[in-house]
Length: 276
Image (cartoon, rainbow, N blue to C red; front, side, top):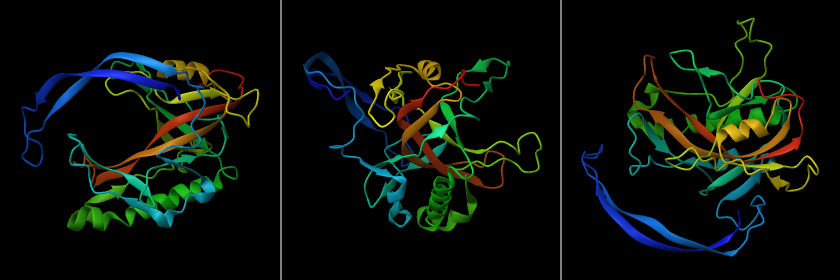
């Protein structure tokens, strides 16, 4: 990370879609491939803190009045949802979250139809009353700000959508879950078309205030091996999309919501056991 590279590339194929998109058009384009790579300068593997085209802000600077949502991305061809992007004062941004000790949630248990355990591609970040009140208030306010844009985004169809809350709170009527804290769902960043993890994980246990050492997690499995139950972590996240489902999927309204991804995770303190 932060290395300086020189690439030689060549055109590989010209491609054309065989089916029309929602606008009745067939896209075509040119694909490129890398012939060789020369590393001119070795990177320091430190998280990017400045010089980035994407603004990095803390929770204290998260001004909801400056949040806007773009028009849907007509160049992104998806079957199930329309994709928009969230901007702060018109720009892309990353959000630094406060630290959290993973005493609940973390790695979700997911099974397929045959009852086989599937490796999850997202993280359930616990949010604790008292410790994360400011964060939960900000995320609730973000949801409300996005909902206020429904009329502009969906026009006469605005009432056909509901907003999936970012902060998932336990069902107070469910005795088996009511004692568990709220959580937010955060996906991992992966290389398109592969399982390669691009979310970076840094070991900061020796110096929680420093940049730490890159743990070089190349897969999601390696992330789960590195981040354990009861670890204390601090995350930088990206709101990578605002989505609007194209069908009701059995409900009364179509679902809309925000998608979050880990940019990087700092491991501040070691836990006592593996993620549950």
